[in-house]
Length: 231
Image (cartoon, rainbow, N blue to C red; front, side, top):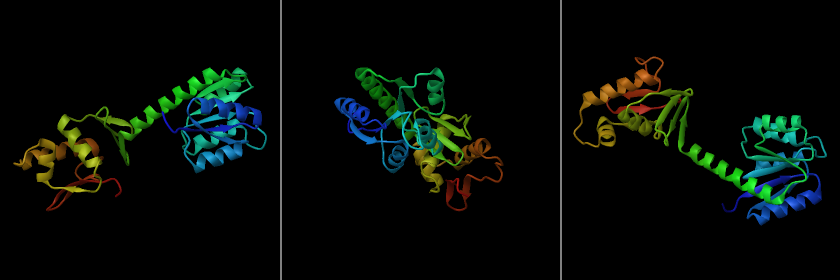
């Protein structure tokens, strides 16, 4: 871990100072916000690796408001709630609306530091997995598992079909000639056009709602084939 930045949102300046020390002692940078409104503004305007968030804050937006606001806009930054409110309801509610962990005040700085590191590591691994996923329209390809999905449903593909679809989804809108497909997928320069046509037909039967009038995997007459999702 290096250069990670953590947003600290708490209306108590003494707590903000203490949390800043905990964050910096664990090798992270700290940015502070005195209320929920400023926390949301900062989280929307720049990148943070984690938020340490108080629940009871002065102003119109409390910690729960911050969580709901960020999650509603698709911001999945890890959030650790720190609060003097230790009721089971508050804990469960905070986790239910999108917090990743809930630590009561007063807190142990060593334990907090360990939780921060663990949550950031987990988040970074998740981000790496997302980067290995290619999404296009209703389709999704996961490189780590060699799986292809449509509308969240797994589409069973053979090994050659998987290679071909990775090639297509990684090059949306690009036209591949039969010669290019045969060389890239089969590793051969002598083209068997019938094989290409059979595989294209099989793929259409799995990808298309109407295989005879394909919407995604199209024939470009005189040239070859292309995969597109924007038409």
